Image (cartoon, rainbow, N blue to C red; front, side):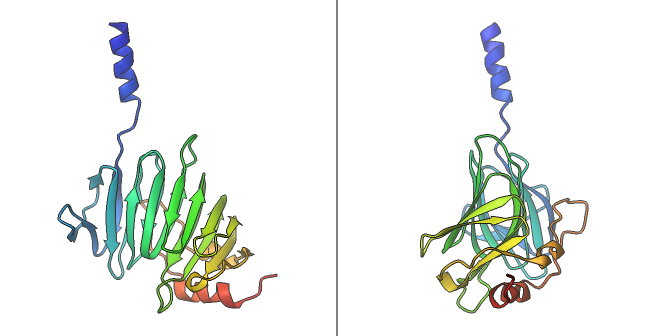
Length: 213
């Protein structure tokens, strides 16, 4: 009897794997089993993976199994895989990530040209800022993010307050302190304003054109 009770307690000690929609605004859709994008609802849940798409002037805030949060800005397409190691694929647009550090777990954000790996941090990534659709830039609000360039195979660590860019699949820029990272809306609380008002295009141009040394 004791062994059965012990097994039951062990089973219920593991969290249910789920992706939860905790806030949304505007036109937000997800890909259903037929491969069609259909309307998303607040508090809707998905088992371990799903693909989301936001329209103009839209956003969605997702909560992963371990409490980590991902906020999709307008005109963003993101696929989420939430298992032992959370992983998201950013096809276009921009996202905020707040990953809760937990022993044995990590988080990876992938685009076609880069992979960002973290173990407890808060960062922002934008993909497809120019007409070629291949630009990537990333800035960090808290912690350290390891950025791997899939074209050049280089790896750079981006610290709090810094940002890097990968223009059209070329070499990653050196991490630079970026004052305007603090102006981004890092809020991940569903009860507060979630919309980001900083121009992503202007910020990315600033990253590539200015000298911060």
